[in-house]
Image 1: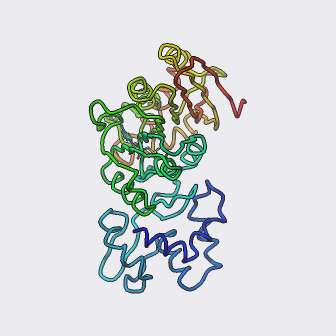
Image 2: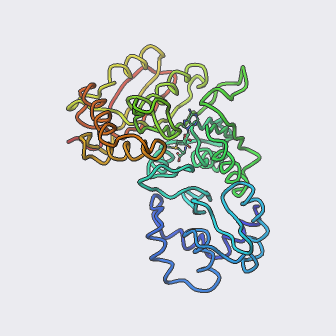
Image 3: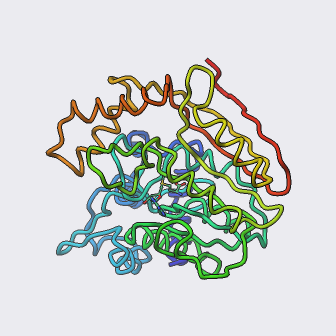
Length: 349
Ligand SMILES: C[S@@+](CC[C@H](N)C(=O)[O-])C[C@H]1O[C@@H](n2cnc3c(N)ncnc32)[C@H](O)[C@@H]1O
């Protein structure tokens, strides 16, 4: 597999991708830029970035040799002589190669988003660190940590996504310092495992609507911070003294106050942690807002019989019951060995 990536780098694809800023993973931009390519590089970009089918016997040798592993990991399908990637692209961000789904307004199985890049920028892992990447998806946070010389344990709920994370570790030549476990947050860790220097969790945060009952893998519980809360609850046991944790979260705001500001402050004080909450993007929570409409369409994907109007009312009602006037995309940094609480608002409105 490392031969596959070495061949890719020589093919010019790494050069092509290097001209896109770190967080612009976007098929439309790639498609526009590939118009300037020709020959083998155009065919590779079409196959790996744009999801175009290709004739298996015309692929470059290193890619053809990697095909059985790609098909085995579920990122490619082969029908007769034709192969194509399924949902994912293969791209490079922050110096690591990643099979993942480019950002989309619809729920995806193998997530990568602007929040992935923003979170990775905040995590200063060092060589020798032991890192726990919860909600790993296809593995971006763990891969960035391992690229800096850390050893990373990744935990992902969906077995098929964990398989993609394993493939990503392999193509980056990092499978000797990355392990991928399948399960719910801390559950798959061995009993008595040593605490970690860094815990990183880009948790799902679309609110779960009670109309359907069960929670899908890309949902974050009743107020969107349900999984975040469970990650925080496990830190006293799994974060080493003096260690650091980094989380994303959707936090509700009632005018200028964070709805769970008091809860977070009390949690930090009780456990002796420094907690810095950085508030970024502000999202509206009314019936027509992108957040509510994304939540509704997300539920309709798995429960097509549900009534969109009832789902909209359930989502708006959830925000109203909590007095929320907006939702904020937030990054939480937790430092062991200090007791402190602060909020950095990057988009005060
Ligand atoms: C927002 S994606 C984050 C992907 C990746 N860490 C990143 O930063 O790009 C969240 C991932 O968490 C997984 N997930 C959801 N609930 C989980 C749970 N309880 N335990 C472990 N993983 C979970 C989802 O399947 C999804 O792949």
